[in-house]
Length: 132
Image 1 (cartoon, rainbow, N blue to C red):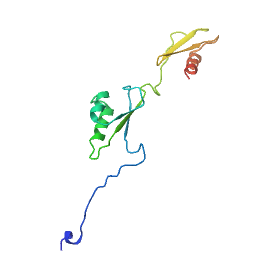
Image 2 (image 1 turned 60 degrees about the vertical axis):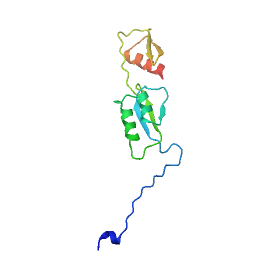
Image 3 (image 1 turned 90 degrees about the vertical axis):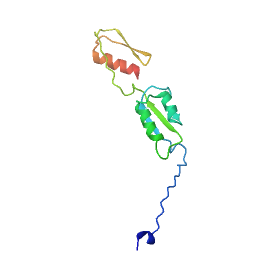
């Protein structure tokens, strides 16, 4: 007796969307400066292409998401500043007592005035304190 005469198998796929707000919307996270806000929402791959090039990782990930059999209605792309957590190298040509040392970071100027016993370490620590 063939198996199909004994067992009837029916396979269905029920796609239930997540009902809680914010769940079910994929987020692609990258390091870029393509837009000022932290997250931007896209409903088509063409709209992603307005902000990203076809060789950008964020675009490639969005293509993957929009190419799924069950496509999301929206995709969000988030950003981390390219400068975040990056180490800054400070080079001082000379170390002098009672001297103003200035540094510009993201358009903001920071200043530290060295004291009577100036050293590179004290100047760098002073600039870091001014920034923080």
